[in-house]
Image (cartoon, rainbow, N blue to C red; front, side):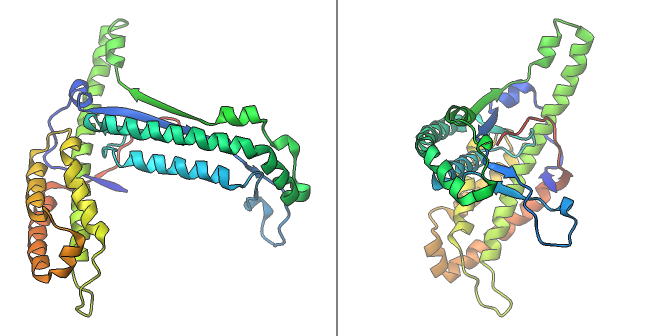
Length: 309
């Protein structure tokens, strides 16, 4: 897979410059697991060592509700993620978005606590149901106690800084300087990846709307889905908060798009074919500009983090 970055590269970003505008957040969501391996025989001539067999020792709507909420929380946070490859379970978030992310996670944790309480209140009953459904595959020892179940459900949220060179200054100046040079290169890479990633995202959204405004093979206009326009306008709305590298070139393109699409609704755009042609012409111009701003670059992975999601 490849990402996009700009040419020429950004100016070097220091840790202070980047983290005055963004924070590195880790979000680890834990829950008790209820899938187990089993040795049920399968009637097949296939090599049985290549066949995975799994059973669910608990399968109930109360548990699935927690899983759905966890998935929604991760999707909600992903919307604020800056396009930089930090590590698994880690993301850079613009400082101006932090308060909103805090509110989202606070609300999520309150809802999760309520769902966990509900699940724990029916846990004993669900075990009995599982015993009846699993028959001879039921094993009491596979079921954690209620206290263990509660202990497994938790959410860990951290905001990280990178102060290794400063710490090493007290140990060895040569080592500290070497690590400081590595850190400078690291944050230069972050800046390039964020800037290039935002350009790539906008290019994809513009291409998608242009495709929606085109005709199919027999000349008929395609159906314009609301998401094609709303996803682009949402990017334009959030761009100022996410533009942590002060990308003036992309800012000009965003301003042009705001002037072009200001006040337009999907319903209005569907009905006005003449205005669709005006929009297409403007988007073609924007696409040409974006093409000159982005070039492919291999995906980089800088840090690693145990992903408990």
